[in-house]
Image 1 (cartoon, rainbow, N blue to C red):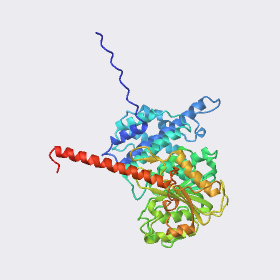
Image 2 (tube, rainbow, N blue to C red):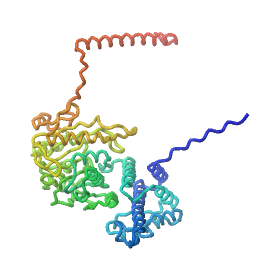
Image 3 (spheres, rainbow, N blue to C red):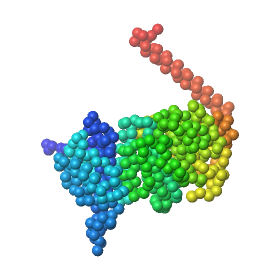
Image 4 (cartoon, rainbow, N blue to C red):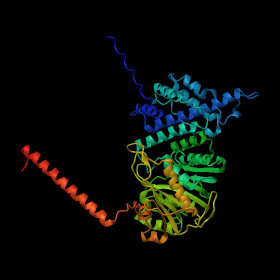
Length: 514
């Protein structure tokens, strides 16, 4: 009898790029600090993209008459021969591949003024084996990059994945937290940085700038219409921000100092049209004791033990006369009365500094379930034309948005806003600001007056104001509904009694009953 043909083996699904990179990272645990591996991988991502961009342009120039493909002036970034991915990929199995990559990074910096001092030169370290580096080179070689705008999303995905995963692994350090893309997008869509200056006082890896650029492209704006400013105290994160801007051709004036923004303000005399920030939450080591008489504290001196209201006042002080800011903070900032924070919040409300408050659901942030809120601050709330809209006079009012029910779980521990959630928040805010089509929606949004807010002790938690969501009227008279519900309840009690009797009978049959 003929033997049946064996069923074809199912091919294992291809591993995602993130899975491949994380597998490599896990193989290095114990010998290499996670943050070091992150910079190894992200540095190669950067180099791979620059090479793809260069090689695409190089091929185009070869087909142009009278063009010289080896003329550095023809390129945004000139990639010398030893720095080109093709050369490194060909040497991926060389025992000195780490040194070759470091030399490639140095040559790239030497050839491009904008890249000087920002590329990692750590590949020759004894911690990184040539086998591991060769494997990483192979992984990135297999990426289908064309050196075009579409590559940004792939590379941004890799950046976000690593930054998020390592944030989760290392936990929150000094209150710092990587800002999820959907939170960044929500703030950008709400404050609409279309023209003017954009500032982030704790810019991290530059996520707010990148989303601002995407927002401009989506709204037919030009990247040259905004000027980028920022400050960061972590040197490694600062270099990542510079790489992030360079890879997208975004010009920005970023400053680094070890003291941090609150202690050493890099732009003391500058005022900005838009400010976007996710400052470290609840930090106590911000040198507040040295800044008791600082001019930025318009609404009150922030407590030494918590910098939340120092950040809010620093940001408000740096707004231009028509400026608007979006700030991510821990939920405690909305209600805390410790060490005078309640008095500062009261003065900010009475001083018409707060435009809108948004409570977000938990589990949006990598590695923590901490729920956060958004503060929208504005300098001029008296109405009139701005760079993008004509606004209604909203002095004496604050919009409250309760977004805790928005979003969906994308994993067991991670929630994310969909684009429709972001649009719902942004559209509601803009309708309220313009006075066009806005209505309070129980359970979601409420425009509250200062009098109402004062009655709540100047607490800014949206849930106190939006109330409960309306339940659809079923059209059943109350008396009839109660009669039906009581009948159903009595039936459930009777069923419960029957189950109890059956269980007792079974126990007696086993010799355990009374």
